[in-house]
Amino acid sequence: MKAIELLLNRKWILKKEDRDLYYTIKDSAKEIRKQFLEKIGYSLIVTPQLIKLEKIPGKPEIWMGIQEFKSIEEYQLYCTILMYLEDKEKEEQFVLSEMTEYIQMHFEWGEIDWNQFSSRRKLVHVIKYCLSIHLFELNDGDEDQFIRNAQSEVLYENTGYSRYVLRNFARDIFTYEKPEDFSQSEWMDMAQDRGIVRRQRVYRRLLLSPGIYRINAQDEDFQYIRNYRNQISHDFSSYFPCSLQVYRSSAYLKLEDDSIVRSFFPSHNTVSDLVLYICDEIRSLVKRGILKSNDMEQVSVEKDWLYRALQKRIKAILLTLPKRYREMGCAQVSLDVIEKMKEFGFIEEKEDVFLLYPICGKIGGNY
Image (cartoon, rainbow, N blue to C red; front, top):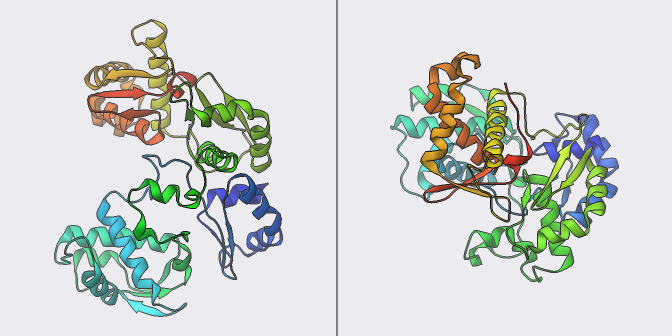
């Protein structure tokens, strides 16, 4: 079970980094592959260098993506670097100037000027991410010098892992017309309401999303959870210690204390504490009738009203928060909490309102 949890936690398992774990998973690959392929539709890739579980979301969420990247340009640079590495052999060395020249020639989203400080800083940010997942290794030099001086040189060595970053698609992606085509590509020739498609979609959403919310009375995905809750709970508990909680309009996977799944809420930080604190206030406002929930247990509230309510609530505990938050002040802390709740999928921003999802009423905490 721990091997499955580690596959879910990590981008991949590298033999070079963890030889024992690599062979443990490889020896059980047939059984693990069957478990994931049958229920979730995930492929297990096993090569002489690495093992990777292809984790595909059932529904794209706002928080998904590379958390280290803060701009679209960094994703664009990352894709161009992957193109550059395609022509490199394993253990082949290259220098930074060669890569920057390639990027400048093949960048398809405008022009890159390495004389601009912002361009150099973004590239270094992307390079550090590539190093962290071992797409290539640092042999000599320091890429941070490139931020200060565009003429700085660094020597790298390709690992060959970049070939396994992108997933294989069943058809030519240039035929796709909208973003949804990517998430539905493996099911394009199948009816979306067929059992296998719905099961895989629901399992993926439960696995990777904070919760599943019923969108209307005829929501077939949510109805599937209600009808097969015992089987779903049994399947997930075979992957890692957890339980399935199903309510009138929402469903969640609750992790047990001995689970080692990496991404969970609440984590041990001030932001999680503040989100719990605000959720407790939201639940109180609903109970007192100040906020009204609809049939799906969702609450629509004006943005300005919510900001003011949060500032008032945070002001009451501001002096108990760490120094960094005290210096930020109530207004900025409130904005940061709202952004985190959006990232967690607890709320959704509309044109002039916030839509608060049922999870805001299921959890809470106080100082």
